[in-house]
Amino acid sequence: MAALATNVVPRTGLQLDALLVAATSGGDTALTGAGVFLVVKNADASAHVVTLATPGTVDGDLAVADRSVSVAAGKTFFIPLTATYRDPSTGRASITYDGVTSMSVAVVRVGS
Image (tube, rainbow, N blue to C red; front, side, top):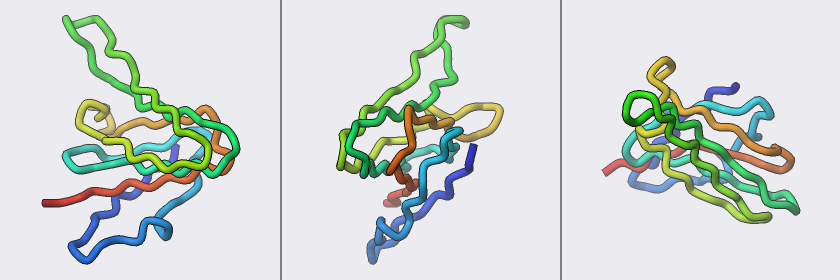
């Protein structure tokens, strides 16, 4: 898994295209938190599913389902990376993709 860098959006703005990197076939990791988003650009002719692992449980043993987001062909999605997806052992979210053909990603944090 590749560790994606978090890009802070300054008050003067941020050019997103320059930040996008190829999605990794083995998945990626990213920091989480308020105002943090995974940006996914799907330039493929088919939709792709992005899955965020949810490491939490409820009632001590009931696993919380992972979050799956279908990114339509030719579209760009912003997916919130809230603390819900933070793995306590790594401090990062684990992100996987059903395919990485023509998929690029970036992590951005929007401050106050």
